Image 1 (cartoon, rainbow, N blue to C red):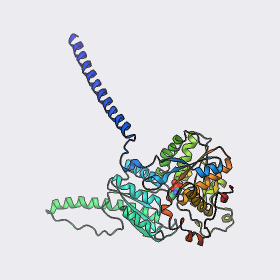
Image 2 (cartoon, helix red, strand yellow; image 1 turned 90 degrees about the vertical axis):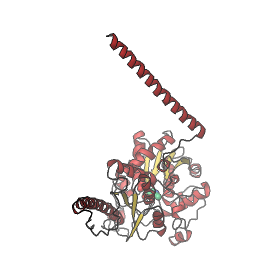
Image 3 (tube, protein in one colour; image 1 turned 120 degrees about the vertical axis):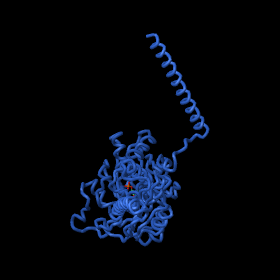
Amino acid sequence: MAAGKVTGTIAGAISMVAMSYFLCSLLSRKGRLLQMIRKKKVITKVGFVGTIGNTPLIRINSLSDGTGCEILGKCEFLNPGGSVKDRVAVKIIEEALKSGRLVNGGVVTEGSAGSTAISLAIVAPAYGCKCHVVIPDDAAVEKSQILEALGATVERVRPVSITHRDHYVNIARRRAAEANDLAEKHHKINNRNILMSEQINGLHPKEENLDPVISHDYKVGFFADQFENLANFRAHYEGTGPEIWEQTDGSLDAFVAAAGTGGTVAGISRFLKEKNPNVRCYLVDPPGSSLFNKVTRGVMYTKEEAEGRRLKNPFDTVTEGIGINRLTENFKLAELDGAFQGTDIEAVEMSRYLLKKDGLFLGSSSAMNCVGAVRVAQLLGPGHTIVTILCDSGMRHLSKFYDNDYLSKLNLKPSAVGLEFLGIK
Ligand SMILES: Cc1ncc(COP(=O)(O)O)c(C=O)c1O
């Protein structure tokens, strides 16, 4: 009994010493960390990927003063890959790695002529992966040059309808499957070689004659599928939405954005509505897109189309990355109160106005989002706080959206001095 008591006391003393040692080291580590933070005032980000997200939310002074509302823009163009799609690339790759569908040494494939391809090409190497992009061959040649410079392999293909098996998105899906097949074949051949070399003392059988577009070096292929992959939605539901909520202290009245895949508008609107159902969420839709009709009338076609007068080119717009004529899995998750239609000339005028008044050099989708923000301000009246997304900068839009000669041919040359193009004197 006495021996047991002594043993118990010794054990207690040992655990007390261990506990105080643990606490001391924890406190001194915490102290060192606090010292570091006080000295540097910034916490070091974890690798390149750590710099993605947490973008500033800025007051757009000219639009706020012009409407009497607080119009705030989330500066996604400040992400390291230059657009809102950096967040999506990280989320798609991280979820794929977690599920085991992608591994270090694998290849991520995507069919995209825009920002998503650039974001995937930048982000994939940070996870030990490669990127294969399929783009239509009418896309500006700078696009493939940038992607190749970033280390991606680029396949330029003939532009065809999305329903065609050789649409660039469908080819990208196929390339991922081919990479998987090749990896499996390679694995089998290697195993057979080991077996046979054991049997025939060093003599290796010839590999099958493989001549694929995709390299046979990848461990696995994974199709990013930004339109249907809900990791896109989650990037905004778990990232952009909560950031907007925190940056406004939850005191915003409305959110508005255009949709391409729908990931941004769906993820943010759903998060904000769950936090406060009174936050009003809107879509702004470019010419030729069917989403305005879907939100306002519940159908994907216009009145003219319903009468059999389908537009010849439904994507006749100078805005890039927004507008779509099919319902994606991502867009289906949006929680919207209404929609506005924006025109090309409004987007062009808005881009020049913001450059002149605020020094904001924005891409076409951001300009359209700002048109939407003014429309919401006009609907709700002065005194409301409205948030929108500044998706990318004007840098990627020099050859079209910022080329006045190009715009003149489309009758879209900007001429406004103020916001009169939106009915504001
Ligand atoms: C520049 C740009 N802005 C906006 C969007 C639309 O965002 P989302 O695809 O989340 O609807 C895209 C989509 O590709 C884009 O590239």
